[in-house]
Image (tube, rainbow, N blue to C red; front, side, top):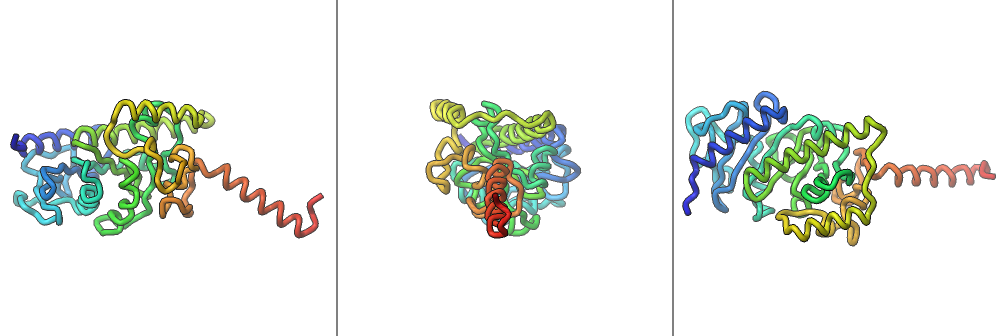
Length: 279
């Protein structure tokens, strides 16, 4: 059955209105794309509000980012390089959504990945959401920063920038963005109440098994985080959310606090011992 491009363009406009009305973007922020085939994509244009688009706004490009069709006055988003990198590295992905949801972007600005297992739905459907290192918008820095996370995750925070989600189709990619923002809001508000109560490892593993039984598509820590051996992302201290997928950077990691405190205590003990201050 032939793809009805006009219908897909209308769907892109509808999702654009949703992310705008849900305060996930401001002004002309954000971008959306859909794969028509391995070499052809539809995408939102640069410099327009995603809340006020109509189908004639949408551009068609090839897998190199070259314009195949665009109405006068419209050209593809400058962030399309990031979308194309996702499609290149994840053949299972049919749509990509980039937005700046308030709570999720706040975590990205603070340098805190969304790795705490606090609610069943997030653990089963979303998994962990790491932070890709900062890259200058519209350059190859962002696709390069995101690439290392694509084999392991279906959502990524962009340091000091926003969030990126991708899935088998447009609706699924958008709903994943909703899930990221809802998870971030719950995590933030539970911190205001004294800190969330996290699931233990056994509970996380049971939730992972439910996911496997459901046969959900995409990448997820239910399939063990390959760079951490037998540890998954909900119990590896968040270290797979840092630059280099396993090497801590200067960012703050929610799960790493206890480990860091232990390290500081051990260093302090050794220094005091050398100074003869230990009793």
